[in-house]
Length: 109
Length: 100
View 1 (cartoon, each protein chain N blue to C red):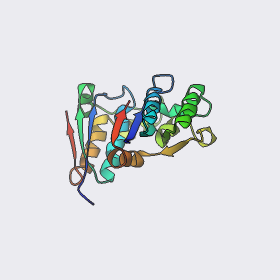
View 2 (view 1 turned 180 degrees about the vertical axis):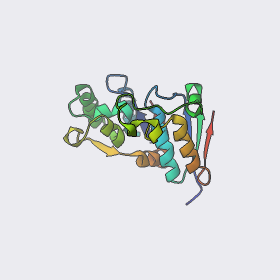
View 3 (view 1 turned 30 degrees about the vertical axis):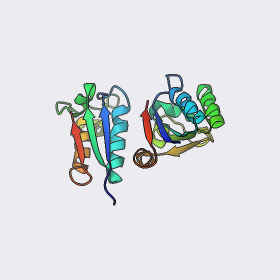
View 4 (view 1 turned 90 degrees about the vertical axis):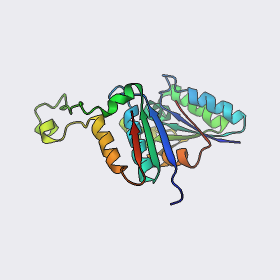
């Protein structure tokens, strides 16, 4: 079992489902998967976006860990009660740790 | 700390086309702060990020406010200036190499 870090930068309506689909397939092979939502991918963390919510429901069902970049959220006005419960707000320090220490393989999309 | 690791990044995005350069600047800054060496390769449009010919530009909307003009030193930094600051931060240990 490998630890995968999938960094998604695209919004849910712009190909940002890629990491969720890849993550689902990796989970089916028993790998550990963390998706870091960066740039427009942060929209997937917004509770009022149906396309993002579908991804989050599927991610929870398959056991994907979800982090969202705090700056990307703030830049898009997504905060407080508008962040989905299954998403944890993160930052560049944690992303560096994930890249350098806590992951076996990293894919940036 | 133990033996330093090195983060390698290939960056193909040019200035102002999308959010990726700023994301990479933030990532490089954090990696240096955490003690990692960093190598960045600017490739394709990414070579333009370090072009010294870039000039700061005024805020395009608040033209009547002096604090938003380049003469007041509050205008938008160029990508070359961001890289310059990162290179200053990474001139020792940990070290930043920026290739084009």
